[in-house]
Image (tube, rainbow, N blue to C red; front, side, top):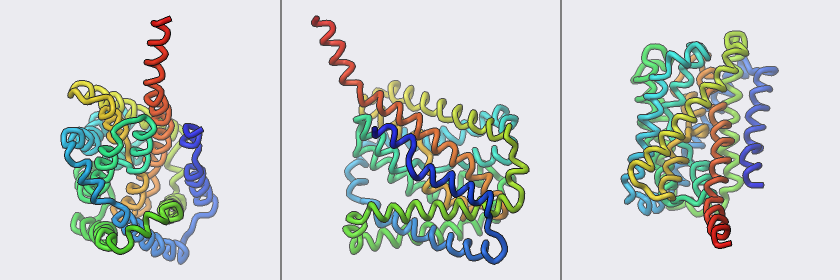
Length: 332
């Protein structure tokens, strides 16, 4: 049952619904300006809450496992970008130049927090290390992702000037995040108690950004420039990227002599990309009408990673039962 909920969650359906609404009823003119202001406020609130929720105690508790964290960070911020560049001759014919830039943006993002921890827990991996790695990856992403975007996309990405991008990141992401960390001593317990309904704020912010971004993209002809062939190719690209990273994290975990629990953490924390961070960050980093195409690969990759990792987590969770069954069969 938990497996099915991970495959078909309400938020995924809401994302698809928002894309459909933006396609049929996109905001434009004064409405687009109003939604732009609302989006900026929502992004600030989102990162404020991220800062208020991030437990320094959890980070300190898992920080000692530095070898594991180094492998996870290397997969997130080194392996993914290198694969995105290396596979360019394969990916561009499948998705076109515009969506390929979105794939490169996907490769530059930090790991997701919630699903990495949830899958690690379900698979009976090293949960404290997963908490530490995922939280630290989210924090590092505020600094590393804009740098990687400028390195990977270069002149091809409509990111504005480098100084302007840094200023936007500082004001809209870093300042609210730091403010949330400072306010944690006063509101941390309240945030923890109300985590369930505050999740609505998180998801609502993402849905608002997606609607605004896709509205602008639809008005400027997104679905006329992105063909059905390229959309089908994008499924293949996301699948290839995820498969290679999953294989790489598994091989690295074994080759470096990590325990089964640590290998599970590396697998799930090192193969994830954060929709919660990536969508609002795209709104800050990119200008013009290309934001919809930039986040489309991320939205698709997000769902594929949930489906594949749900299956893998279930298999890892049942590993002890399989061993016991083999033992009992041998005894008989």
